[in-house]
Image 1 (cartoon, rainbow, N blue to C red):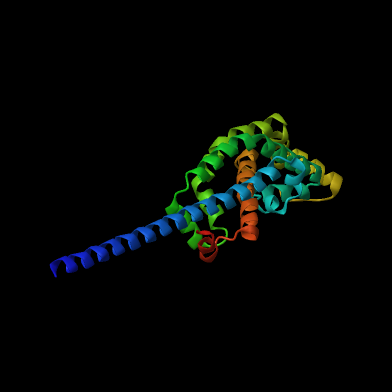
Image 2 (cartoon, rainbow, N blue to C red; image 1 turned 90 degrees about the horizontal axis):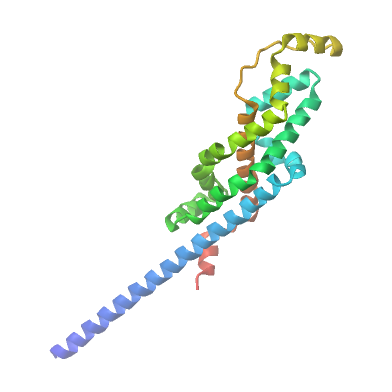
Length: 234
């Protein structure tokens, strides 16, 4: 009698352990698939961003990069255009595009390392955040590092090309503004611009634009849902 009871208890114990083990395996598989899926969409979306930054032509016509223009630089460009210096604004944009191309090798290792370091718990939070959450996670993790890494090179590009000096002169030289006003008949305001460097604004545009392109791609192409992940778990 005791032997029969012990046998039943043993079988029940084995069943419970097996059931728990199977559940753990299934949960582990789910977490691995989710983690892989998050890294996959981020790799694809950031590759899209890199392809835009590497091509100056694409950079100049990309709407996401235009939307990423800092408000301060928008105001500066509006002022320059009001002075009839549209050509200078175009040259500024071309130089920012060139700078973006040059900093891709600095951006890549930071982004790739951050994607590689994503943990299952991070992936679960990203899944819960919905579309765009993966890019926002990556931006939060890397934005400060990216700005610190690329700003010196962007500053150097804007300064060595002479564009920063030209813009500052056009904005702050009242005699030049008066001469332009006489030629164009445009008596624009004479506000003095003591803003941060053009290179800093350009850096912000490149970094914000990078994530804007990635987020747009993620929103259009991501299928990160619980049902989708479950369907992938074997």
